[in-house]
Amino acid sequence: MIALLDLASQQEKDSLLTVSAIATSQGIPARYLDQILTILRHSGIVNSQRGAKGGYVLARAPWQITLLEIVSSLEGNNGSNKGVFSDSQTLEKTVVLDILQQAEKAYYSVLGSYTLDDLYQQRNAYKQQNPMYYI
Image 1 (cartoon, rainbow, N blue to C red):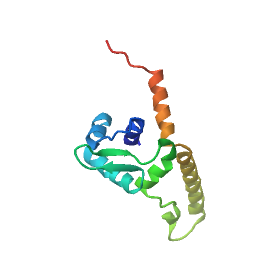
Image 2: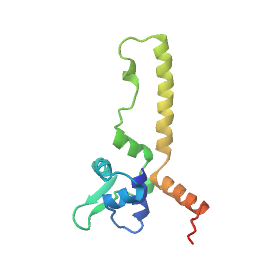
Image 3: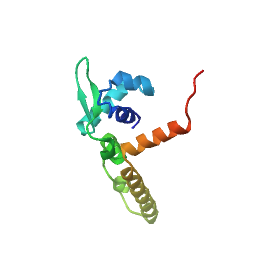
Image 4: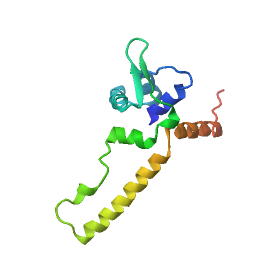
């Protein structure tokens, strides 16, 4: 999500960002970031362009990309804890599974209610609250 925030900030400029530029600015290992962006490209969240002037750009506007879509793309949307207790069902296992399902519902609900643009706006609000002064 941090790398995608960098891409969202470039959306208005309509310019591509390289893996190395994002990795340097965010302190993310370039090889790891490249793997993540490849997955996001296959999911249709980012587009890439190869070559000397290549890099990555968001495939859609930031307000059209939910955090749930990002997380589901990266972690897979296996969608449940149902396989946790596959052998026998006891009362204790039923109680624990109910709680896990409630937590999972809340997780998906929260991530589905925020977009990349929401994060971008919050980041900008924090910047306004804590301006940096250089002497």
